[in-house]
Length: 278
Image 1 (cartoon, helix red, strand yellow):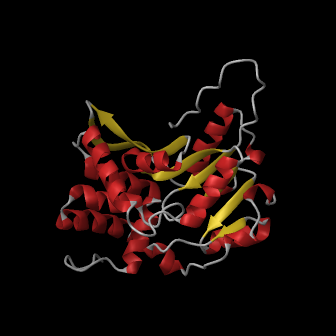
Image 2 (cartoon, one colour):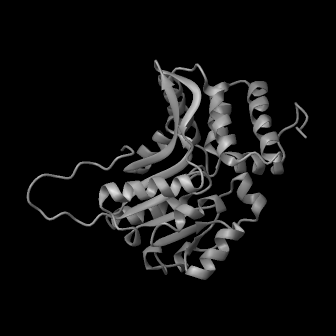
Image 3 (cartoon, one colour):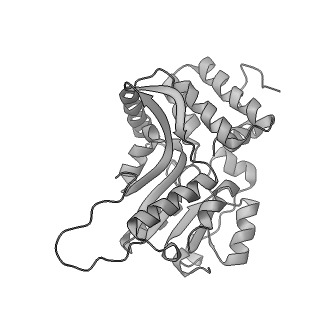
């Protein structure tokens, strides 16, 4: 699994047309915001984590663009060894996957159904490999399009080469389809938030997880499929519907001021942080 397609097999067999299913991760395939959940786990210091999270909340409240707050997030890893962070990511995933509801089963079933139909799977996220690679391996994903923090001498610099937010998701998806020879109209994408709209509209079919009003409007207009939202805090804040995925066809058939230091973050703060890093 990588951000590039796997090499084609040998022999003279005609190449099978490539179809790719693109999946957002946070609150689409899992019930949480991986960037914040992992940062809290990795720092193992509630005060340090709270300070970092509240800084992002303040930036979101001030209207700082999502791309910039996403970049600010990665400064928390400046000076840390890439390998140590990756190992921490595997321990984080091992803990989280034991938690009931971590994997959003309806979306995971859809992913596995598409795999059974011969689709390659690409996970697309503003999060980064340290916590996404274990998820991708567990789900059998073929590609990972994600944030790419800068590494020098095996340590994170605190900068990020690629902020996989909004339109950048669609750009990365188009590049992968172009490299693989996949036709966009034969591919599909799934997401839960309006910031996923560029990704969902760059392919031929789409699926909406939860009740984001912007995506719901597009689903109604274009016949996109609907899946229930996760039980994550942001999804709850948005009023997630528990629709039955069995009632919907495959997407391939669709038409073309900071809080007090010792208080837990409120739902609105959680949503602001989500907005800051999508």
